[in-house]
Structures are given as C-alpha cells and as structure tokens.
Image (cartoon, rainbow, N blue to C red; front, side, top):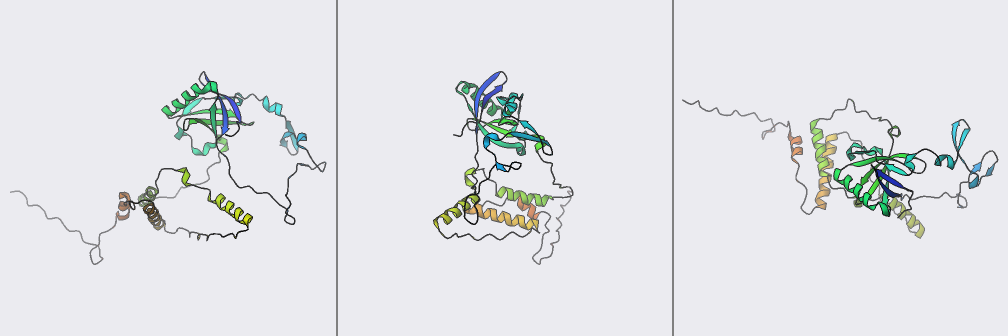
Length: 302
C-alpha cells in the first residue's frame, strides 16, 4: 500500500468520519537518463545561481512568486500553513449529484479513502447510502498546497475520492460542426458498426504495447541480441467514401467476432439491412427496373 498523503475527516451533516488518503493510481512510464555522447558519463542537473555563478544547496532555496518582470514575493511554508482553508483537514460533503451530471473531462486524479478505526461504521454507512441512492458526494479538499473540487463515490466496498478540474481550467471548445449534415442511412450503418463492436468493458484485455515493446528493446540491447522490429502497418489512405469505409469496418469486426465465438458470426442486424435496401429500386431479370403490377379489383357485390 502506498504511503498516506493526507489525513482528516469527512463531514456528512453532523457525522464525522476520520480517514486517510492514498493514491489510487501509479504511472509506469519508462524513464531515461541523459548521457554525454563522448564518454557516456551521466548528465546531472544542478541548481545554479546566475548572479553568483555557483551551485546553490537545497537548504538555501526559498519559494517566490513573480509579480512582475524579475520582481518576486517570497512565500514561506508558514505562510502556506496559515492559509484559512477548512479543506486542509476536512472533506465537507456539500451536495449529492448523479454521476452522469459530471462530464468525464472534469476528472483529474483518483485516491482511495481508508477509514480510521473509530470511523469504520459511519464510513460503511456513507458508502452504502451512496450505492443505494446512486449518487456521488461533492466537496473540496486541500492536498499539497492546492485546494481541489472533489467527488466521493463508492467502488468495490470502499470510497474513492476523485479530484476535479474547476470550470476555468477547462479549455474552450474549438471544434465547430455547423454546416455538417449526417443522413439517416449513414447513421444506421455507423450504428451497425457500433453494435458489431459492442461488448462489456474488460480492462484486463488492454495493455501498454508501447511500454512492452520498449522494455523488450532494452532487454535485447542488454543481452546483446539482435533487435527484430515487426513490419509496420501501412498508413491508411484518407477516407473518400464514408459508406464504403463503414461497410469494410463492419465486415472486419464481424470477422473478428466469428473467430472469437465458436457459434460463428453475428446475424446481420435488421437496421443495417433496412439501411442498405431502403429506397433501392426493384429490378427484373433483364436488369431494368420492374414495372409495378396492378392488383385485380374485386367485383362489386350485387
């Protein structure tokens, strides 16, 4: 378990739940060091004072904010500690909302909330009521000198805290679809492709192929083995016929489904057949459009 990075209480009305906060995720990026090309010696970055032309030790560094060109205001750790922020040690649930009301673009980072021994009962109560009502709690929390909007939600018999971006941290949308029209036939065929690829989400199916290939490259170079690179796939040509591209994608998806399923491929969805044959004229054996035959009229009753 990772080290706790925050401790405090969740306030739920007049109920207080002492908790600790732990990071829920970890980055597994492959990192590199820089070496000098001529002798392969390690390159290290030093804290350097340009005015005195010398390296500065860690204990001589201070924080400062630039208010204008080369004009700074010094900020000490004591200044930060004395900021009047209730969220430094308290997560006060101020509202409960449906999870669908928060767009995923607002989510930033996930943390596990673990109850202290004295808070197990109210912790379980809060988790159960969130599950029953199908809502998430909204609050604020100050972590590492930053106050963040956050959301509490239940996950596998525990509570997860998600820090959220503030609205002014979300960039303005720059994509405009005005003047672009999509007809019913295109929408139906695209829907067929979605149906062909529809499946339950299983995160264990997905892997970081770039990291795996990079680690294999490093291992090969370390062991002196020849590095064999797979043939790269040809870049796809620009799509000029949208419907043809959709149909080819559907056939490819069905082929993969047929290989994965012993029962064979899925039957053609009704709406694709309707999309393909809608408005299509009937033809005779000669290839010409067949004439409509008139139905015989019933004789009038005497």
